[in-house]
View 1 (spheres, rainbow, N blue to C red):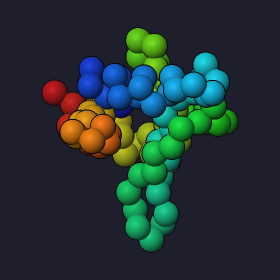
View 2 (view 1 turned 45 degrees about the vertical axis):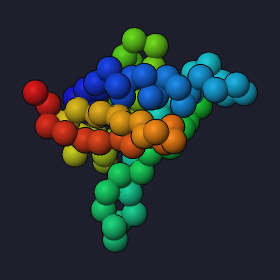
View 3 (view 1 turned 135 degrees about the horizontal axis):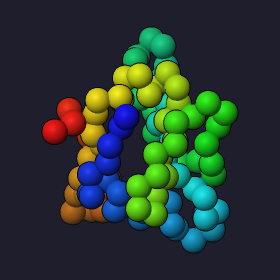
Length: 94
């Protein structure tokens, strides 16, 4: 199962607790377009049917079933640059 670093939890918390978003908002990870591969990240008001839900501290990540198989042995990390832009990174679990 996908795990989250402390930096990822902090970045997700910052994104999902903005004014006007529902309390149950989380980060959703889904398979990208078939021709490009990759993954798509978006904010979601809750999980969709079949999503794997990862609850860490006070954040939630919803993982689409097709993406869950790819992410099973990965860890999600985040970096924030000097402009406040967040980059999410996948790395092997330690």
